[in-house]
Image 1: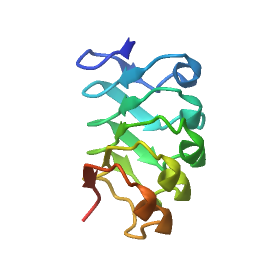
Image 2 (image 1 turned 180 degrees about the horizontal axis):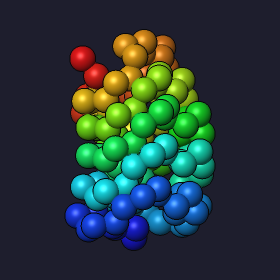
Image 3 (image 1 turned 135 degrees about the horizontal axis):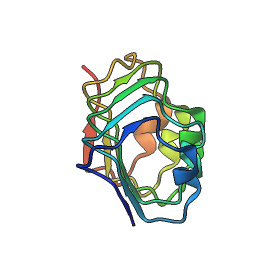
Length: 125
């Protein structure tokens, strides 16, 4: 398990974390900042919580290539910009997708309608 939430870690997230064989990654409520690692999509985790950080820039394109077993991704309350990657619709088991309180532009990819198991879908206003 990759549980590092509610600690005082700071700086950039080590990209190597997303190459580890873990089921869950909790990095919420720490002091991480900067860009999300470009290899975010390498993670085989089913739950990734990166909420309440100071991440900026775009959601990496590799996110759309992440494991189809991804069930929850929480990127809310960051400073992310750009678009939601088209690949988000490939997550056939996605139940929670939360990018609220970010500065993402309001274009939604057509593939978002493919999230057949979605239970919580929180998008920017």
